[in-house]
Image 1 (cartoon, rainbow, N blue to C red):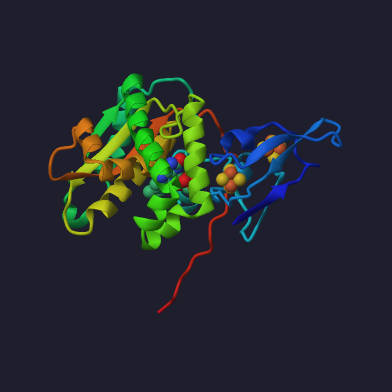
Image 2: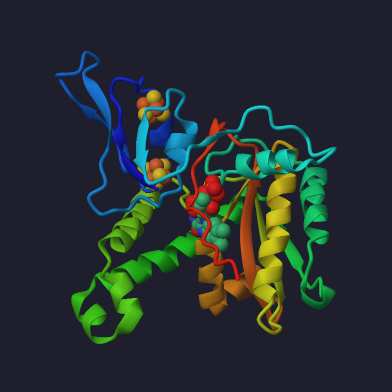
Length: 297
Ligand SMILES: Cc1cc2nc3c(=O)[nH]c(=O)nc-3n(C[C@H](O)[C@H](O)[C@H](O)COP(=O)(O)O)c2cc1C
Ligand code: SF4
Ligand code: SF4
C-alpha cells in the first residue's frame, strides 16, 4: 500500500490525519489559490511513511488517495465477542489499531487485570506460560522510562550522523540501515518531538506493560507475541487502546543498564512492551493489508 496524496476537493482540512501520522509526512501548507488559504498535503521526500494506513483509516471524507491495495473494511457495528461467529472475530481483528493518542485518564487496576487475564490464556510452547509482567501506571515513572529510551536514541543518532564513525566502524546491513535517509529522518523527527516536549515513545499513555520471560529455545518471542496480541484484542473490548512499543523493547534488550533500572531479573529477557489507555481517536475503517502470500502444497 502506498499513499499517493490527498484529494483537495474531498478534504475538509479537519486535521485528523495530520494528528495521526507518526512520521509527520502530512501537513497543512499555505496555498493562496485555495479559498481556505491552506491545503493539506502528503509530503514525504525521505519515504518515511510507514504504510500504517492510519490516515486513510481516520479520514471522514475518504480524501486519502492510495494505491496497490484492496478496498478498506468499515469497522462500524463491531459487537462484543459473545457468539463469536467468524465474521464477528474478523470485525474485531480488523477494528484493532495501534493507538498513539490517549485521553488523560488513568486505567483502573481491574481493567488492566482483565487485559492481563486474556494474556494468561494465550497458547505457549510446551505450555510454558513463562510470562511475567511489570505494570507502570505512575506518570513520572513512565516519563523517566521514556527519557531513558530517548537518550539512547539521541546518542545513537549522534554516532550514526558522524561520517567517520559510520564509514569506519559500522559494517554490512547495519551500515546500510544507518545510511538509509528514512531511518535518519525518523530518528531526527523523534528527537525533534522530544525537544518539543512530546513523548514519541509512549505517547503519554497512562499505562505501560513490560513482558519478560526466561530465554528458552526459539519460542519465547513467539509466545510473548501471542500473549500481547490476546491482550490487545481484549483491551479493545473494554474500550481501551494499545500499541506495541518495539523501540522501547529493543532499547531495553540492548542496554543492560536500562533492564537493571526496570528490575528485570537475571536470566530473563524483555520480549514485549505495550502501552494501554483510553483512545482519543476513533478509526472509521481498517487500512488495507498486503495480499496473502500462500504457496499451496
Ligand atoms: C513488534 C511490534 C513493534 C512495534 N513497535 C512500535 C513502536 O516502537 N512505536 C510505534 O509507534 N508503533 C509500533 N508498532 C505498531 C506498528 O507500527 C503498527 O502495528 C503497524 O503500523 C500497523 O498499524 P495497526 O497496528 O494500527 O494495524 C509495533 C508493532 C509491532 C507488532
Ligand atoms: S483527515 Fe481527511 S478531511 Fe481531514 S485533513 Fe486529512 S485528508 Fe483532509
Ligand atoms: S500511511 Fe501512516 S505514515 Fe503514511 S502518511 Fe498515512 S498516517 Fe502517515
